[in-house]
Amino acid sequence: MSLKSTLGAAGLALSLAVLSGCASSPTSTNAAANTSGAVPKLKVVNNCSCQVPQEIPGLINAGYSIAAHNAGKAINQDDEATFAITQFSQRSAAGRLLAGAMAGKDEITGLVTYKGRTFTVNEYYLNIINTIDDAANKVGIYAFKGLAN
Image 1 (cartoon, one colour):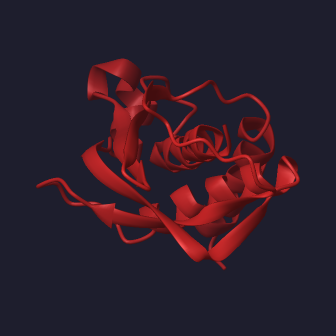
Image 2 (spheres, rainbow, N blue to C red):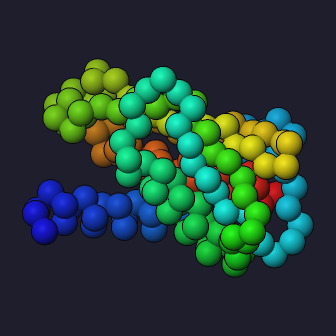
């Protein structure tokens, strides 16, 4: 495993641990209420004309799964909500480290749909510390919070 991969995996693990307990509520438009002890599985699709790296859906699902686990909720594999990525932008690592906010932002916006109800989640970072991986995990947490309410 390369140093970059090792550092990336360590950063992701740390990010998941930090992010799993501090998410804010999603912007809701008739967010689906879930009173049972389970939440639906989350299907992530690309619904924008942008290029989304293949690992991003998995990172969104990882944030969702960790948030469900931390809340003591099971994921019902027979029930499905959809997370449609509607906006995506990613800075290069060099640009992020050298120029910070001047290099743009890492951002993910998604529309979560469940049983005819929808809500939007969004996260972005302009600093040099957080990456698109952190934003992906955070929107997964926001999706969980919106579906678990």
